[in-house]
Amino acid sequence: MKTLTFGLVLAALSASSSYAQQPPAPPTETIATAAAHTPEQQEVINLSTTKWAWMADKDVDSLETLFDDKAMFTHMGGT
View 1 (spheres, rainbow, N blue to C red):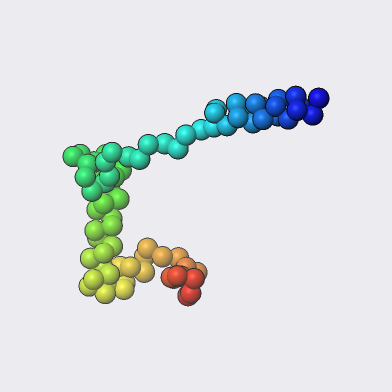
View 2 (view 1 turned 60 degrees about the vertical axis):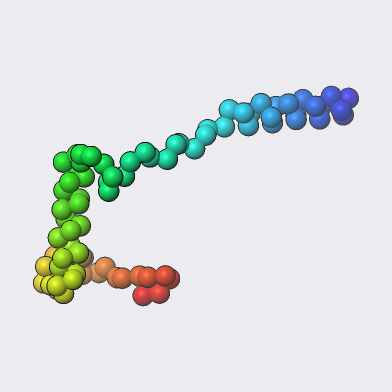
């Protein structure tokens, strides 16, 4: 009886694992490799380019508009 119960439990476990969701396939293109961007993607790219230019130019006044006064920079677990 114990063997039959063990067999049924084992069968149920193996059957349920066969229905587990598979991870999605990785994307075939990225923002950097896309031939065309959606308007939303292009807006994010433009904002990112502008932000990096402000950072390179140390344009603190423009950067200040991006961050809440309570925002805190955290890097690698430190502040």
